[in-house]
Length: 314
Ligand code: MEV
Image (tube, rainbow, N blue to C red; front, side):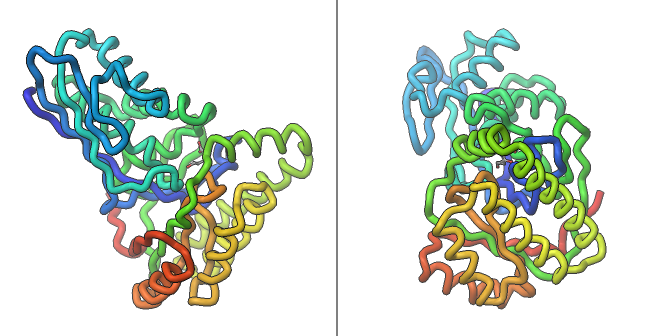
């Protein structure tokens, strides 16, 4: 094709971040309005190039910070014998980077889809996720695959590492308020720190991971029963365990405490932590909107509201 496009979504982990790396389940959902879009156009007599918010130039000169993506693109070209078909790739994203919304995985998914469209090649879901994880491994060493799987999905998912993904519809009254703490999340560092903690204090740390596992099963039950108050309580308990794991931080803790005074039924960090975003379970859109404006005054830099009652089943 002379032109192609690939799209993916931001992801929000409801519960199970970090413990999912150790084979425990997690629940995550795609945010349909927050997208990454990649377009590719054929070029003539010019080497392939990339346009993105971080870099504009030849593919081969992509900076170190984008090495995962460069690795992914070169791998796809090589795998399909397409090194001699130059193109211009434009990456546009509504996702804030390094905030726990899965921006690196979303980019990898959209880039892979756009390249396969461009070369008119078939792409199975399995290959898509495996390819996206190539760049995720470069980003933070030991990805569970949750970010890529959720970015590529149109449904909330229940995931256990290396097992088949389950799409789970959510029919919950109320909505999710997602807030950016404005602090760069440090997923790589956070994942490494949990691994270190597990080596240093194996018993206590396994206990924390087991508690997160149990809370994730509780959350699934509460979602099934439309028990929003119970789910809020589960979120709060998960935040306590994540704090003990050492992946929260002062600003997150502060904003989370404020959100609870503003009507949140339960609040926790989402994604890698050490900054990044947190989520608040809100009884209604009205309460969420009001809380969002106060949280912004208190230091949150961006907010999103996601209804939880309209997810479709397949
Ligand atoms: C990052 O969004 C989620 C983590 O659980 C890491 C992973 O699943 O690879 C912290």
